Length: 423
Image (tube, rainbow, N blue to C red; front, side, top):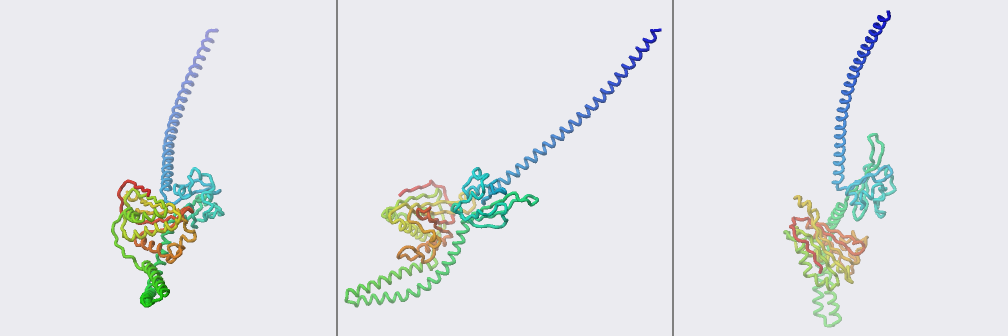
């Protein structure tokens, strides 16, 4: 009876084990299917991540490219750009802002933007950077330049202020051109008036000199003859001044042709060298390493250069130093074929200088600080320079003399060795 029972139990155990294996096999299949599905999802996520990484790298590259593009634009601008945050601290500035202010970006970063401007300048440091109004501008003097300053707030797309941008434009040359234009208009009006007055005075002066000469011949008293001589001398002195006046009033007759400025200067210095040495003045000359060729009248330009040399000698009665140099500007433009180059001729002395209040008056007709002067020398110089399409200005040389700078448009220059003389 026990044997059948054991057989039944054995069969039941076998069936249970088979079912367990079947369940395990099904579970294994499902697990494998789940793993395969998970692997596919993982691969899809990896592909999506790779795509996102590529897109992110592309976006970053585009952002860097845009950043570099904007930075290159800022570097290329000939205006100064300074950006400050709401506290007024500098966060960015370009190359020309460094040139105009004298601060490098490394030194200026984080500093208050007001500190970039000299205390001596007319910059209004009391205004709040966060409240700057776009479109307003003002002129300031900074490090020898006249700058026009524009201030504009920087805002987010929601209109929230986040800082201010300060734009610095160098208007020094424009200001000088405006002054020259006003000066030329004044000369034209005064020249016409001076010519009329000179002719009106010259006619009776000729009669006075004639009658004084006849009177001198008839006078036997030595004392009276001396008086007649004094009259003749005074008349001739007056006539000489009127001649200068007419030289100022008349349009200069010029014979324009290609000339080398360095050659013209050399000719003037040949016959003025002895006078310079006699006045105990040390002369130094530095010529540009290209031939500064302009279209001009050599004889008229000799008058200009000689006048400036004599003025320098008169400003140094006890001796000193006179430095003359020629310099070609915008040589890079010339090399690119752009005919915008100019030659500058500088006359720098260590004399008594010109008082600041007289600087803008020295080219005015009849203005002089020298006893016996006519006040027409620099006026004639200005007229000759103007005929040549040039410009002339004067500045105090840091309180140690006077600095005259003449600029002429350049025709062309040829490479030569730099010539430096010390006479």
